[in-house]
Structures are given as structure tokens and as C-alpha cells.
Length: 141
Image 1 (spheres, rainbow, N blue to C red):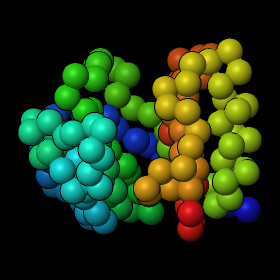
Image 2: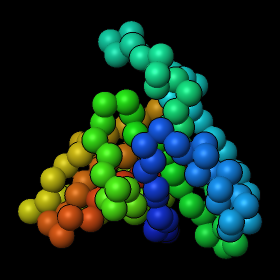
Image 3: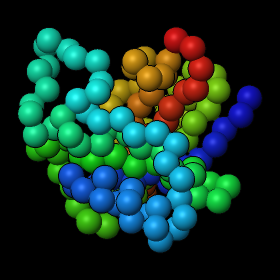
């Protein structure tokens, strides 16, 4: 059983600019970028045009650390100072769910723990101290 914690930066529509900046300032290497427009379509939730070019998820390598970042979806609140979250990645769904359940005690669920197209178990929770965590599971669905 493995667990990793990575910083996750949430930008307000300028993630591509931030990626270029961190490449130059930190010597970051881009491991991957996916826009909202590249995500699988959902007929129940059509993708607004202004969202398609925004970054849904990007991963950079800075030295030995992975830095993740994305843009907010248009219309989602974004507050400077609260744009850093922590992504906890585990290799077993049961372990991810256990972490998620523990962190949500006296906290607030941003996205219920569930299977997604990118993870067999993923959820977002803000703990009772105001720290937001993205709990993710690596592996097959």
C-alpha cells in the first residue's frame, strides 16, 4: 500500500500561463496536460465553449516532486490564497475511501467519493481546519 501527497494549484483560467512560468522559474518538465475540451463528453452536462480551452489537469515534474494544477471550471469560485490544495494518491480504493471518510469528519465534502473516468475512487473534501484535499486512487477501474 502506497500513499503520495502532492501540492495541487488551482488557477482562475490562467493555468497555461502558470505552466510556462513554472517551466522557466523552476525548471519544471511537463508530464501531461488535459483540457476540459479533451475530457469525455457528457450529454447531460454540455461543455460551455469558454471551458474547453481551460486546463482540467496538468502534471509537472520539479526535481523529485510532482506538481499538479488545473483551472477552475467557468463559474466556480476562485479565491487567491485558497488555490493550493493537497492531492493524496493511494493505490487501493479502500485506502483512499478510508482517508476521505476520516478527513470529512466535521469538514465539508466538495465532491463525493466516487469512480471517475480517470480514477477508480476520487473525491474532494475540506477538513475541519479549512484544508482542501483531493483524494485519488491510482489503478484500474
